[in-house]
Amino acid sequence: MIKTSALSVLAIALLLAVACGGKEDVEVAGIPETDHMVAQATIVAYYIDAALRAGMTEQQINVTLGHIASNTVIDEFWVSDERGRIDYTNVPGLAFEFPTDPDSGVQAAPFANLLLGGETVVVQDPQYRDADGALFQYVGVAGVDQPRVVQVGFDRRQ
Image (cartoon, rainbow, N blue to C red):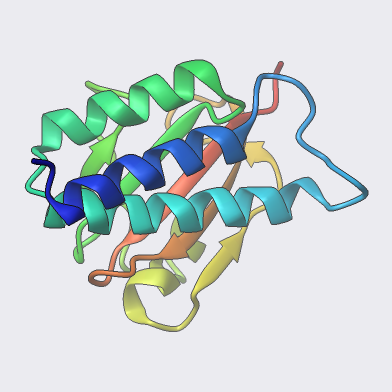
């Protein structure tokens, strides 16, 4: 018998995959793409909470995020702990940490406000990443289970 929490995880993962659509343009009925990105990040925040409650491992969560990224418009997921360290991502092997100072001057600095409780949503215009110079757009929301950054990213070079 499947536990209720496991059913919640499956339902949220399905909702996330459906809400993220295919690799075509995301704008629907005149709704700005960044609104869709906020919704996607919010669904991921609830997915992480449900997955952890269901006892999923870091590897299982990362595999799920990888499947979603491979089959939807989302290119990257970055989910931190309360210190900004990445717990969950579909991009293995890239060492990254969110800054905890929103005034640090680095590209990811505005997302520190999600850790500090100053913001619940951060929408960033497309810009070149500090890590590799790739043009990306990121949107993040605060975690629902603990202070954390839950971020989705789109490669704007495509």
